[in-house]
Image 1 (tube, rainbow, N blue to C red):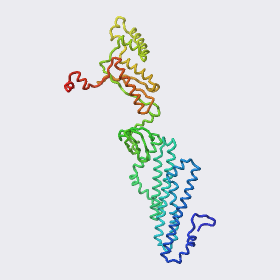
Image 2: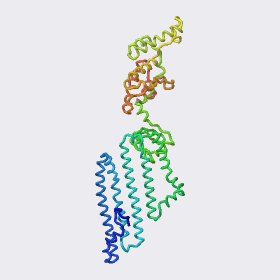
Image 3: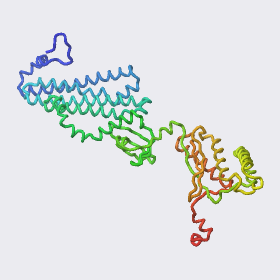
Image 4: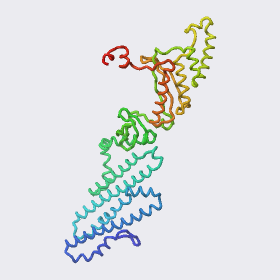
Length: 430
């Protein structure tokens, strides 16, 4: 019995028995059947009434919160999943009113209803967590601070607790009886949830240290991953390679193995160009006076030629006797490879798509069996792949085409056409 003045949602057992007193004139089995049908009917009516109330609640919610919030909550059916709880409560209370029903049957039905209630409440809480996560993902902070791993852990805890409640209800034991037994099962649980625990810890490290975000371009050669991160979950990180294949990597592997994240390159606004043009060593030589005069007419080389000639003349005057200036080994001279290097440097300094405030280097590499290389090490302003490649290609198209103007030749391995000119086996084949 409830206390005087206390309002309850459902009438107490004594009141219900008074309402059903007319059943006592019927045979026992009829009484039991009719009472059972009435309980089910009451549960159905409670379900309809609860749906109506929830519908009005959702409608009222749209006027108090942003419309898209209400849309997300409604899409995840947060309140709708609570509707079945009321009919379950009605059956759980109403089964006590069915006359002549064996105590064992009443106890069984009540335990099943309690277990079902735990499942329904857990589903509703899970839907609420999903809705909160969906709302969070709409905000810009979600891109840099994904919480999907935490959400999955929270849902796992909710479902584990619900599982204990279900087992406790069906076994007619206190939930603490089973929870207290977890200590003895710790080793087994650690074995079963090893990857989950490791990934959860790794996920915390990844998020807190901002190591990986959804949308980052990463490389992990050991897993053949080279693409964009499309999902960071509790157990796995999904990477979509540029060939559109999906690579699934356990989250904890990001702490066990090194990986490259290209986010810094995109945020800096500059993408490195690092490429070498190999020149034939046999074409490297000093410039003739006629070539120097011709290069002086190049707008990109005019200042370089004048400055370099003045510098070389001063050095030769200071270090070389006048009667020995005709010997090349005694004096310094302009070379075609050095002039080409100066030309490339000036060309790139005036290129509109190249950063001049970043590391800017045009250097000569060590001579090898493939000739001597001129390496371009600069940063393009556009980090987008397609546009970056277009900038890089445009630069080296020009460099490769201008090389012969300096009396140099780009090195390449001998081909069939080379053997044909020499009258070798290739010419016989033709």
